[in-house]
Length: 193
Image (cartoon, helix red, strand yellow):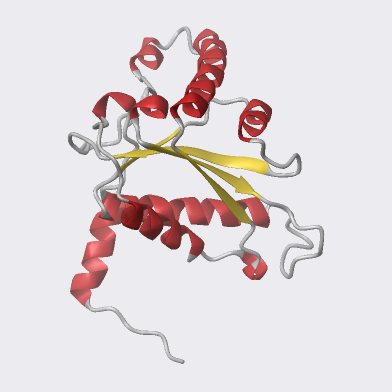
């Protein structure tokens, strides 16, 4: 089976999507559901990501339940207070609000799921498994942008608490926690630039 070549117009569209990918913050999200077919396309894009040794070491947890998202937000609030102390000399830190956890219809927790068996290509570089998960995150993010869906990566979380809230297996590693939703408008420039 042969792969296909892409035309200039198609390559330009991909470049535009990459160049216009942004992190969207909570205040910009709309209260609008993401259709199941669209969410399936986003997950499908993530599943099509390359992975070392074709290991596909990812696990996606889709979180729609508001009570669970509120627990995650509580976890964020605790960690955010710690971060505020670290960044107290940077007043801009307080300006970034991550209400996306409860203001978006879908949150995704994306885990690295280690294998108990050796993986081809991962015997020397043990981080290639989690890095493969990052490729899945990028694929999902780019497809979300193509679908005009905003994404916010919440990294101010206690991994063990999130795993406990979601009943994730002990051996799994939280790689990304994403908030997904339609937005009022996409920002032109990265907000932290």
